[in-house]
Length: 146
Image 1 (spheres, helix red, strand yellow):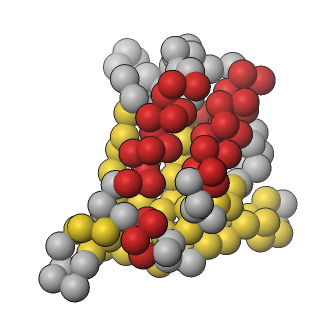
Image 2: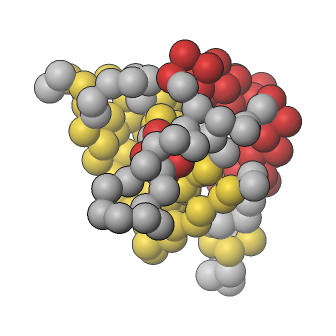
């Protein structure tokens, strides 16, 4: 499971010209799901995201978690994160989990974040989306359970 995290001042998702989801201060997560991923990966990643100290304290040190700052999380499915660009010029998505299975883990990930008391918004799985964000920093991290 691959998560690209961006610390944001705000983020929104638009589908079909309509804003369907938005957050204020928090984390925007683009989530890619690999064929080898399982519920174990979901729990590991959710715990890591919730406890990762990527927000600044009063001394300008990244020392606060999403819980500490009372922020929100937006999760957007992003199968291209499981893409492989090593050979040729066209990405291969052979490692990406089929969408029917991936959606269950996507939902499990969102549910796990919510169970930890974090407000979570989401994109629309398997939809073409316009994602807007104001990255704070910029601060961007890639988390991989493999």
